[in-house]
Image (tube, rainbow, N blue to C red; front, side, top):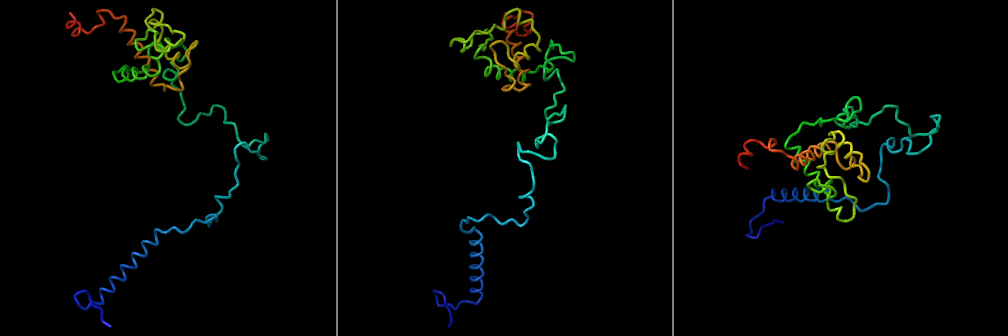
Length: 215
């Protein structure tokens, strides 16, 4: 029997070979997408050692240690990786004797001031107001007013003192060390100093080129 196409031309045997190979490849591709029906049986594990190894679970008992506790207390002085805070000036705002730093250990830049303003507006202005006068929106809702930053007392305190208050809180102000990273706390200190200067500046504090324009 001879097969012909629609124009009654005899088809070459190569056509059948190509069609057969193409059909086989298509079937192989489609079968690769089939993952089978769901099964209630657990997956087959050739090596059971890792899945069934002996181990202690949290809060479990151990017969190896004298106190029968499987969970061991870290050795004295152990510090978690990335948590070593040996620079007391930066992390605590104090010098080697424990005295609060007069000036911030972080160099002052415009980028730092911009960051400090952003963080101040988010975390501090609700009570202290964006001007630092202690008349934020929370005061309008019955919160105890904080002192103004522009008092002589707070203009004279050290940068380390301000950093400590932000970190640990004072009176009815809560600690912000958990919400605000160390770098951002120093940025807020820098911006607070800028606010104080803005409300207590003298003519000598103004750059000469700007003073000429003001005149």
